[in-house]
Image (tube, rainbow, N blue to C red; front, side, top):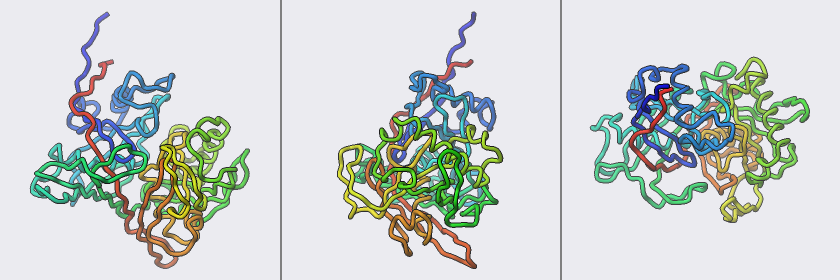
Length: 394
């Protein structure tokens, strides 16, 4: 039996927001993996260490959670007035597939720094000191993200005093603008509210009829009131992730919501589309203790939100779901807006399992149709390791 040497592929391991993933330049991938298809998926699965029936991803770069089983592919942009094309692959942990159906808002914070470091942004547009504006084309959903990346002495500034709940150490702040975040390639022709309603009754077998807000903004998301599920909105990961019945319930809600949103045509398709839609439950403000032991006071937040990602309760909040939260909060009458007290607002601070996060959105209504020009939030990013990743040639 012959034994082939491992492939050696240039890669960078970065943290972006409360996620981390393996970043590649498309041109550095083996030729067969430079385009979408089975070869690319097989490569990324092996890089991350999936599928792993043990659920640990020991033989790969993944961290065995939805937040750490991620890959990013970048190239010079093919779009006018953009610097870089950004494609995100959410790698399943125990199954052999890569989900390309949505963006990762957290890793979006690391795209600008990687693009600058790897020469994907015209040097004339990058200041020695100050803020570099990186125009990102999010290829999964066909949307624009503007990243404002701090520079110092011609290099990306990574260290700083910006604190992000869910991340242990402070870093430099990167502001992200998600332009026109309502999806236009997914669900009901791209309507922000695919059913045409701010609130719907969703029939879920074995659960009942739930009052929900289903929105396409940042990422397709199904919002439900916490109390309707028997929760209070202050739950941490163990309360959900250690309860198989709860996980099955959320997956059933997700599948039926995906069908109602037009994201899938048959219920069994939901199993091959784990990344989207998300399911989140909301509640009015309440005191609680975060996963780090930090006390969060009801007076310091507008509402509580907990969100499911890849079948588990997220340890903090997905960046794209934060966009959905900010957008829905800005539109009077949605469940998110009502949990935050109702009325017009252009920003909210919500409590999540790791602490709090502020997100803003600019919403307006024309001829009865809601539009959001952009959603804004701050994140941070840092290079953890750079060099080459090794992958068996088989």
